[in-house]
Image (cartoon, rainbow, N blue to C red):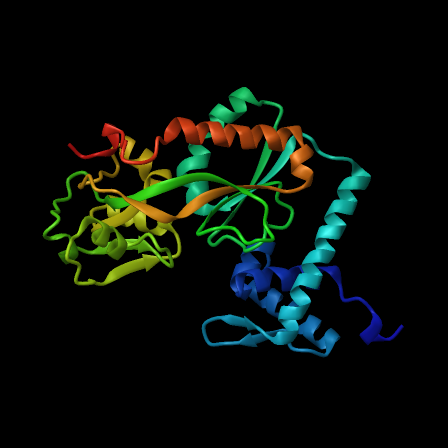
Amino acid sequence: MSMKNSLPPLGWLRTFEAAARHLSFTGAAHDLNMTQSAVSQQIKGLESHLGKTLFHRRPRALELTPTGTTYLPVVREAFRTLTNGTRAISGPQKNVVQVQCNISFAVQWLSPRLGRFYDNHPDVLLNISTEIWEPRDMAEGADVEIRFSLGLADTVRGELLHRDHCYPVCAPDYEVTLETLHQHRLFDCANLMANFPAWAEDLGLPWPNPPVTYATTYMACFPAVAAGAGVGLAHDIVAGDLIRQGRLVAPFEHRTPIPEAYYLLLSAPAEHSPGARAFADWLRHEMAQDHTGGKDWPADLRRV
């Protein structure tokens, strides 16, 4: 069999999928527990094997070539087929649930509540995988995914889990007023519709568009804000517990509905998994218990 007609090594394909998902060799290396150099070498090997270039190497990012864009769904579908086939042969692991969510949700909301889940479901084991940005399709291998997004693609099955409101937060002893807010250092999560200008506009506050320090995750903003470096923008899911613990306060009562929302996705096999269904039901219950929505803001989330 000629090289061009032979399949490339499975590891090369896995590396290609990770690099394409992150559009970064560094991100792929982190996912696969490899060095960035090893990822680069495997991608070069795959491109040499195919006789095609899969990525444009830009100074600060990767970009899929037309060949890479065409090949990616083929590779992903192949891995889905292998995963489902392996599960069918080995039998379902009813009590092991693969959970996918963004890192801020995992750290600020999910992890502190896991004790309550395990108290009620000691026979279920969760494997939690985190991402900075959510994938467009359901993450490969995930049974349950919690996605923070403007909405779901037509190809994705899911349900609305929770809609939230955004508001500024700061350290307990930090002094700020509505009139001086734009003069302070501001911190926010990048690429969200829920931002300082949207909050100010909803309040009817004149906003001169001051500079904002943006990060790819709230996890990079909150430590700076809690240390008194300035004012951040947050919502209950990621900041509610920090406020209840007294590490952050909300200096103003006004809250703005955010366009993004949290969605719950279950894979087709997970819909028949007792463990996955138990975890999904628990998520719905916890969200209902924690958040009333609308303007009924619990007093313990305001600075008095």
